[in-house]
Image (cartoon, rainbow, N blue to C red):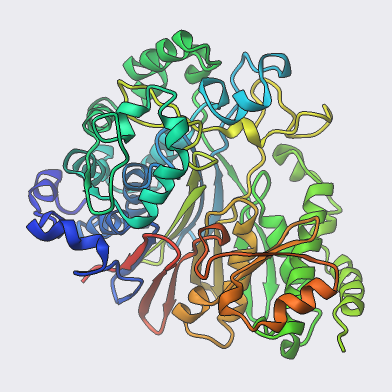
Length: 543
């Protein structure tokens, strides 16, 4: 079991130094984006969550233990992206059993869901916007079945962070500012604005004592309390008083995850395992199948022709996903999976080849341990700050996954109905070279998740791990809008894309919009971790 919880609590973390006011301003020690270790690796979107995962590995926990600890910590330190009120998806490889599988942690629409009681605005923000949170159930399920530590042990870092606080970064200040008007409309104001009045400034400490009490209650009484105990009663009361849809009977149907077979393909000596429906792994597989039809010399994304190829591949894959939705439970029965077909990829590639002739909020963490176990975990409260509402007595934000349902076609597998599961764009991915895992990777970013992962993996053919993550990205929507970090690209790339009919939308040099890849790999007995510089993440391994 490793070190006990008391010993872990006694550890004095380095981020509580007196000069912490300067920590995240960049004048003392910015997060470590690239790390190496021989004893495992953790990469997450917040440096404290990374620290939480490493603490668990050093205490004798395995990759699942570390991932669960880091996921709970992200809910504290990255409230705009995830938390107890959201949903969690996991791809896990268990080395002793040589088993790789997906945990589908889809949330569920409440029993009282109907189009008649939901306007477009109420699906986006407010108490009616939330589905039944699955994150506590998924993390507890994975820990009990595949972890080696107790819930109270893996919750220890998250409780510490909620009690003692962390330093607000420039990114977090900007995100708070973006939704401050909505936060002020609800009881959330007292939780996320200083003294309930103003935004926290960069470098100020943000503490969440109410959330700490909730986490301590989970540590003492277990996740059951969230769904059928006192916490469930408090959620029910809050929803009832504020005209929400979620009730005790929804929570009592605990949204335990479903274990599913990942979908897979081979690509240039790699075997890629990624997330099945309702996730977006099919889109990633189709991209690899299409790009494999082109020679490597055309896959230079820093050239106009390579960027044009990339935009076309991404656009086609997203068009196909939009046109071919599948109920996740029915998908396993489908024999002709066109998006995964190499023959279909050849047909698409033929069309794209003609076109490129020129004169072209969510969070993620990845963990590997020294025993060979691997976890790629993506979780979210959907949009930034989810529904922008929280139970004032519990301290966490509700999700707004009601926005992720189809509301026109009642035959659609993700149609807005009671107990339906929402669309998901997640694609946590594990890649093998030979019989052992080589890479765990994932990203937030809604539909930009898959395109971000795709570009990084392809760049690893001829770039270092950090360079592949740091490199400028683009994304093409199904209707031809190309978002790109143009200031770090050749200036003729936007020109050729526009000439070929794409609409260009320049983004920041390191755009929050274009994903945030967290990646760990194992090469030559060494673990390498990379945290995307686009957000507040870090990578670290046990010493």
